[in-house]
Length: 440
Image (cartoon, rainbow, N blue to C red):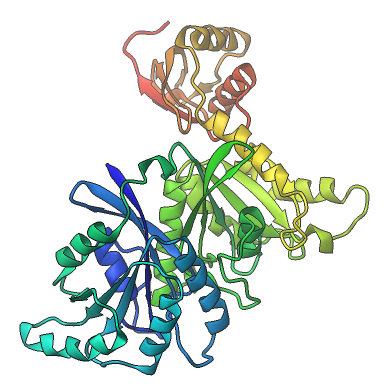
């Protein structure tokens, strides 16, 4: 598949940018609701058309007047324009030319980037006359569309490929380590995101829940390629009452599924609270390596054993995450950010670990001789053969005399033997017991 470049989607609020974005990528990624200014940050995804691909960037609605978040949104829009090879300027064909449209087109002309004017909400041929007033904006490439009904989308995509530069396939990121940031609202995910990336891409605000969409960013650090996904602040399930927050939670789950590694961000000033368990639950369910990141450590106690005591508290609350490394940092002060990459590298290596079958069976046979399984459910478990069937995470199938004889303590023992024998410390391990007619 040939990659052609980046396309920014720009316009005033409620012109249908997120609807068009979702139409182009053929899935629901940008949050679409009848709520003013719902998209705030840049959102990225891939569009395929006629055997070629390009990256589409959705942006917040730009207004001439000073509406809420306009200063931050304009920063995001300017960054999107700067990195784009082409711009789709979306307007509302029902409402006619607005003051905001005139303001936006002046902003876009300054970029000297190729420009397509897409007149949205033209869902009937009789409404084609609604496009005529928009020629006053001075954009020669005008295409009528209906993002909701899919009308004119093919013409728009044809024009995009016509105006984009020739193949940029070599510039496309590939082979990246993907990790996501999850956590309760207002624990500092966007601040950490910006500290890692080094640019103001996600709007940082003291208002809990400023980030609503999952945002992908590709970057390089110390010779390794990464994709970082910043997610919406996750609330305890019982508190997700608004439709927007439900969609944001789904986006966060999707981000976790797409990640190799998950960073759970906690607030040192609040300690460990019950809600954190609900937040990290989806990472556990998806069997992803987790790195616990304790943010705002600069505001916490500086006593000699403070980190040791805090780590004990975390391990007591997260017994199911005893493999997870813990990092203490300050996102705002940008302290100890490098430690994140060291731990990600270790987690990624363990997450992809493959173990030779012959050596694995020798280790498990010796482990059984050293420590027999207890009598359980009317019998004693015997493992006749074991094999790693896949990585990401390392998954082992044990062929046993009877799976019902497997006591949880012995399963934990076998897991620890595998971890210690093959130095697998920083990832979940999946053990599956299957019945076998014969015994050892």
